Length: 393
Figure: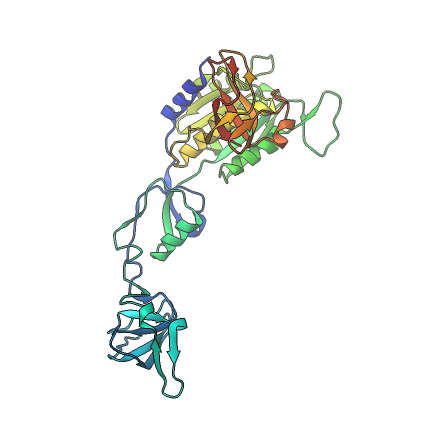
């Protein structure tokens, strides 16, 4: 049995980045850049107006200007503005030759009889309201680093330099297997001795929340041959396999045996933690296998601490093993020394509250919990106001 920190270390030493692929920018949201991105052009690629107004060569000695050409955004014609003349110009339009300043239209006074314009020169200076070529970014300038998550804003930036494809890490494809003769699907009637399958819907939601798009779910009874068939099928189809239940030492716990028969190399088995002690992690080539205990709180805790960080790393993210926050305990907590505890918690301002219902079968606290709280292995009593690691749910 190993410590929580050893389990994290072993996984971090064995995980390898997924392969990257060049995909449409429109399909890249939420993925991670696999390469540095350099701008192929200057942006803007020409000097343009930041305002609707009048473009002119600034002259502090002049009181009025003749109104000349009208230049709209997207007009590709070459204009030249003579000295003493101002061109009507609109936001985004190309700055004509002979112009160094744009006067916002709200500062302009127009003589309707002569068509001439004037403005208060104290409110403007040379160079105002012109976006210069390359003021956003220069050609061949680094605009996004490898490892950056693709957000709507980044998509906008990449589109602004003319890119319609981007190299990203590919998220894992995941199959989960729910084991147990006693499990029935919600919506059906239960017989005495049966329970509803909560782990399947929960894992489906956890995987979607982790950004996984290709998810397959299987169910296996407590039959060794059927379980072996499902494991072999899942390993052939997916990069990551998650199994719920069947990993302890009962007479019908066949998961570990079947994984060994499928050629999976064990990375570790059993962690000094509660809940989720009988957790297994393994690897077969570039595929990763996580066998979680069957109790729902154990599933969620082990997924949060080991599966989710692993999926994030495979998808290109960094610093996946760090806590999301460090907050103060709202009240004293006691635990068994020698085990790391992961407790359901509720963050409120700068502290975290530990509700009741911490048993591994009990899902009720998850109705209000928004985090897991890590209580370290070597502690038996943790006083209120003690800083603790917090992991968001």
